[in-house]
Image (cartoon, rainbow, N blue to C red):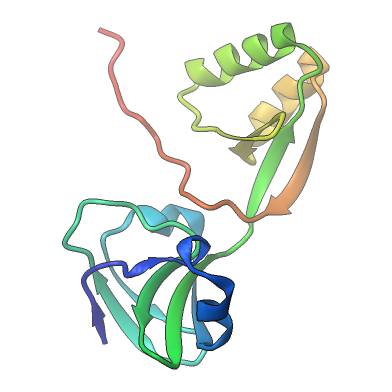
Amino acid sequence: MLIERVETNIEHMEKEEIIRRHIEKVYLESDHLVKRIQRVTSDHGREIGIRLKDPRDLVAGDVLYMDDKNMIVIDVVADDLLVITPRSIKEMGNIAHQLGNRHLPAQFEDDSMMVQYDYLVEELLNELEIPYKREKRKVKQAFRHIGHSHG
């Protein structure tokens, strides 16, 4: 099976549409969400080729295939994350500046900043006494590095 476009995202579907279909899942690591061309295997053992025509990242919940009875949906494997919960805007600014200097991609959820686990960042958080937890957590989109030069 070759997939060239995403049908929709499960979050945009009515509950009735979802429950009347059998759901087959493709589990991806978050860094594979940025790949437009890849070969994957569903949880039912079906091999699927993905070659997206549109330049877009995959997102958790994307529906790769759908008919009246079945659908194939992207799910994400949990990442090893540092979930940072600064107590003040000063702490948030400080850690955001420090992580930005390292070009470390972050995601934000509620009052938390999430970065992929790195022991050096963990040491920095301990040194700065900024609260955090190390957790296995699913993210909806890839941690995207944004490249640039300093001159």
